[in-house]
Length: 120
Figure (cartoon, helix red, strand yellow):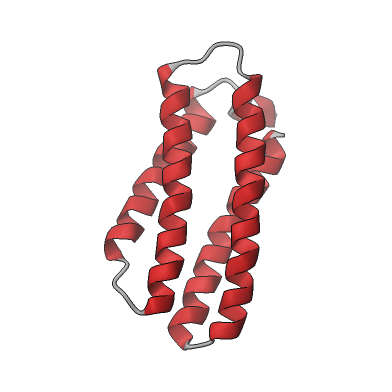
């Protein structure tokens, strides 16, 4: 499940940049299609993340912070894509995206037990 989760959020990061660039170029139709695919990817991220959350033996504060940071990352991605489509400024959401993603990635790979150890 770890590999599915990592693959899903890597795809989400790639789609974020592709959708944003399509919207900025004025290509609304391909942007909208990829935006819908990105939203389906959110469901995959939430499913695999929920399964990983359930597989932990003891729930620590760091685990809850990682869950909140992960959800915050998804919200930031969605707000970036929606606001880019509407032509509104997205700088604050990009900053939040970077902060939340870094928190989630660092906690997931470095601090929590299902991180790097399972990757070997």
